[in-house]
Image 1 (cartoon, one colour):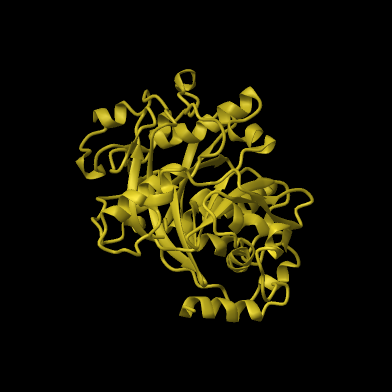
Image 2: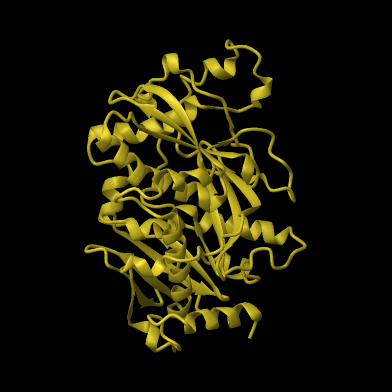
Length: 396
């Protein structure tokens, strides 16, 4: 048994709500992980290592995958004199695929990277998924009304996880009303109005075409730049893919780690009263922190907009400082609880997902009344892995 597995076994033996031993028969039924009491996730914070980028890739405007940085953008502050997030909505181009993003392109990128790496353990890990899925799990202790459902496949000792489409995700992905759909556009438009395709130092005039053309650039959600990073939470080794909005300067070449140059862009309603403040700190800041912290992005830039979608001011938040904003306030969240919860959950998950079969799957779900995460073996169906990944990812 490896040292890491011995440490995992020792850790699990000290937690009373974890089974000591599990067989395949034990884990083919329904297993549950209790969210409450949250107090059991207090205490020393689980160690989270600085994420290290191992590769990056891009999607172009037709959703073609490229193993390069062609869609990387740089941050350049928006012009607040003319920052209408509704502008261009009639030309909005959304990717055709409905539902959550499958894990396939992330696995294609990992296979591409491993094939070209001298490190045969480059993508050896315990769990692989998108950053958004790990964000859901990290925020779950304080989640009261957002259900989620995931699919998982264990292959070569690695758990691959992707999100399932549900009625909830259908309704909330782009909005169920015209107003909600417009508001979902605002976030993408803010990214357009806050980024350029060349280094900020190359901008010498406010008349630069890069700045002038931002307003009329068509928002196309097919286009993405993604980072793939390795990290660990406690004894759980993770690899995640994450869309990156932009960076602040020249991207350093690997082996230097570029994540400290990345920036997350967000929009939020102008804060006008105590209720607005509470909602922003309780809900928005939790997600802003979780998303950025997980991939190692050091700062979040928020455009505060009015009800008509006009940005009136921009504020920068340092990711590591966000938990301090809410610390000690009534009804707020605790970053230590989030990290300890995710650590314990991942340890537990690795004891119940034990059928190592690339053609089988488990369903991981969190639904009303939001008291437990349920894991159920589904048999030989709904595998997370595509056929092309079975051979290319054997090294994991």
